[in-house]
Length: 322
Image (cartoon, rainbow, N blue to C red):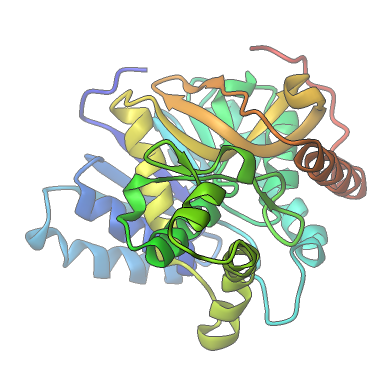
């Protein structure tokens, strides 16, 4: 992929997340053209009108509505379509509806744009990322999901607040399956190379507070949904940073949902692991040392996602290509 402008980004789904991402993408100046696609054409048209009126305050960008044929030649197609999570609803409850959405749109996206990258934001993101890869028949490097990228960012923010350091100086990952089963990789978490648990001792903090911080991390999304109905800003920001890493070949590391083939001892699922994101999409998967307990939690996540894959009947055969 040529990372030089002009760049077209297609967004499928003009709901809260899709529209918020379109807005952050516009402000970033990464795209020369943004195409917003939604079954509700009127909704997409209204969002495009609003976005176009923001162009004078940003960089010159062509923003328009379209259909799935307009994903052709897009550097990246970002899938935000589907139902959003309701208060008290688990992500797996969304599976029946949102898997149908993926089955409807992904084959056409892949047919229109076999060279483009597909980035999935719709939940349950791990199951749907795997389904998108299966249905597309594309190399696994071209299909990824936002995964726990926002959870890891939230985790670093809360740890930074607790230890009174900038979150950028906190290196800690939330791994596994996005949602209730995700887990913190405490064994590799550090601040400036100092293990987090050592930081607790050095600053006279109780190590039990770390469990509280992760509980806040995991439960924050439900809290946001209870308060305002949906979470969108952090997801939109994460999508924009992932897109930037692809377009600029930045080789940044994100805990994105990635199709695994024997990495971490798991195959035929998509889970969030530290992944280098570059011009070709998934450049490589990094292997972070995990404790025995964390390995167990990772395998539990794998089984949960596998059950979702079977429930969604993502059984279309696709030859695995690296």
